[in-house]
Amino acid sequence: MRPWSTAGPPHRGSDRSGLDEAAWDAAASAGGGHLLQSWRWGAFKERHGWIAERVSVRDGAEIGLAQILFKHRGPVSLGYLPRGPMLPSAEIGVGKRLFDEIDDVCRAHRAVSLIVEPDSPLPFQGRYTKAGFVRGPDHIQPARTVIVPLLEDEPLLAQMHQKTRYNIRLALRRGVTAVNAAPTVENLAIFYDMLRDTAGRNLFGIHSAAYYADFLNVFGEEAVLIFAINEGQPVAGVIAARFGRQAIYMYGASSTRWRAHGAGFLAQFEAMRWARTKGCATYDLWGIPLLDPPRTEVDAGDRVAGTVGEDWRGLYEFKVRFGGRIVTAPPTLERRYHPTLAMLARRTTRLGG
Image: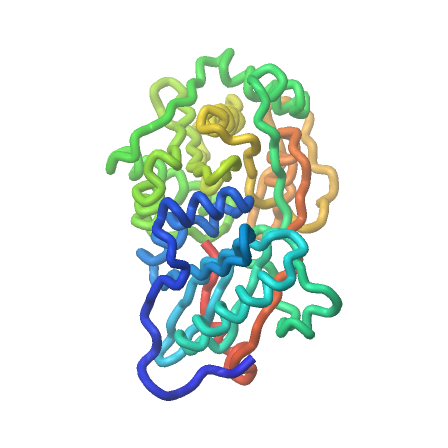
């Protein structure tokens, strides 16, 4: 790999894929691409400080695709390829040509490095170093998750842990309802208030209110905001989105004061039902700890252990009880175009979200 040149101004965006939005998403979906490789995700991240570049190569009927995000800092940038690229299985030739194109785009952006976070193993034989990679940083997106098959209601409930079924039915018995809420200014304010409440209770960081509003705006009918409502009061909320045949639980929140009665479980169940109506076969609960935590069940049927800061035991129990399979992503990889600056860029640039 050649490093970037210091001549000329940094590149500021051109689409090298030759595909429009509809054609890109159709090709990405047909190749089993992740939502983070969808056109909408790139458009969404461009509203929040990133530049999205899309690259494609063809070999007969085979196609390779990659959407790269760039975060610029002065004259240089850091590249990030989330949950991609999308490559035909075992097609080494397409993969090599695609990364040649990716390298050209990265040089145009003066990227000091590119962090690749594959959704599946890359089809290169032998050691990845021979293909121009080094070991990458810790995962930026969740390294392990739970994928739930979207069956009809009764089989869907039957595959869940008995306490999860109990919580959903408890919510219904106690009059909690789950509704698809329009992404109005008022509803977004309600969700964001609950999100701030959740972040304060569980000690994690959140984005600005505009970030979540933009997400729903960009994804439109491919996303949903669901409220669980008890006695007229929204007590839990879920934002989910779909791409291809999979939906993903993106953001969630609940009220510390009013979140009992299984409301959070019911909101997720409704999100799964929404995804099924959109033609999805699976629902990704989006993130559990990399290692199984100690058992944390509590005696009360309508409760799981709490989640605070780096302690994800409660989150783990909440998600695995929906009855899906646990999936672990491959390790991250990195292509270093300017090794001296690559580590500094990684320490000073936030990539997640």
